[in-house]
Image 1 (cartoon, one colour):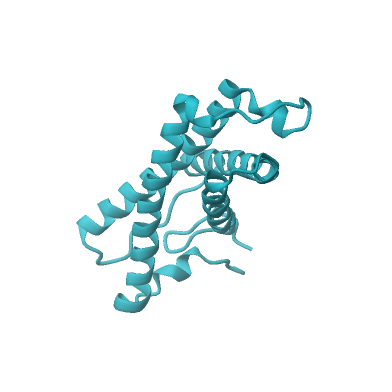
Image 2 (tube, rainbow, N blue to C red):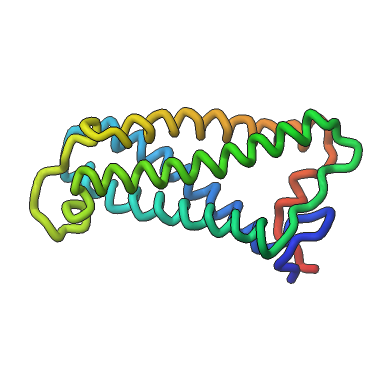
Length: 179
């Protein structure tokens, strides 16, 4: 089982982080959209009890992924023959995704700290939820959703383009290997 990447394929550690993060992000986008539309404080609190720790987990996984690439592993080379603009675009989108995920986690944590919602969500304090719109990280969190959505659309769009148009097998590089 190849934990580290080769020049052609991602290792199982980055593959696992990638797919776990992807599924968690989908859950957070759905729950965050639901939370924003809720008026029932009990329902909002119940969803925030899941949303907040999962968001923090994604932040930690993203930081681990960055440390992994900087110190423990090397990313595979760009596909042979791919145009320079595609390689630069891929790097920009990946950098943007890492940055957006860290900023989303940081703004979520910032909202909880500034608003005092942490003890309320955890059940340590019996008080109504604060209005998160009263705190500056809320605006950053809301804008981050749009940034993250655009970057995810570019990322998924590129994967689909490689899979169905170029048919170059690029997506297989980001799947588990038994080597």
